[in-house]
Image (cartoon, rainbow, N blue to C red; front, top):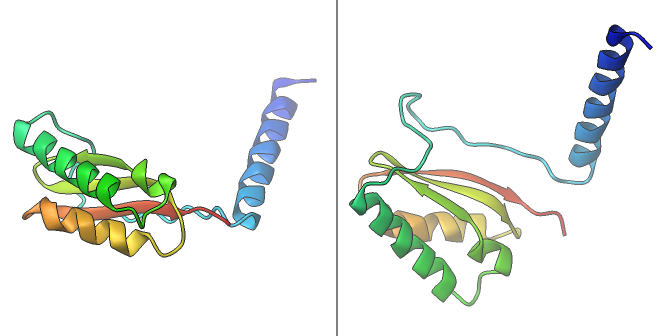
Length: 117
């Protein structure tokens, strides 16, 4: 089998996997920052770390949230709080609201996905 055939088969397999994920309800709709210049990675500034810790504590303290919600990844920098991970239906707004309570002037970027039931 030549290299072109291998590449074609790998591409076809990747497309099938992606189509299967879409069919299973695992649609990834990523919200991007309002301004393309806003970084979406975490910073090591002490204020950013404090905000991340406050959001994490609030998520863990909320008993109405699922284990998935408690495991949301939080990245904080001077301009944004980025939320990533899978959550149950109905939790996205609640998590975004909790993050907003501690974000200050930072934009809250919701990149959460809803886990298929």
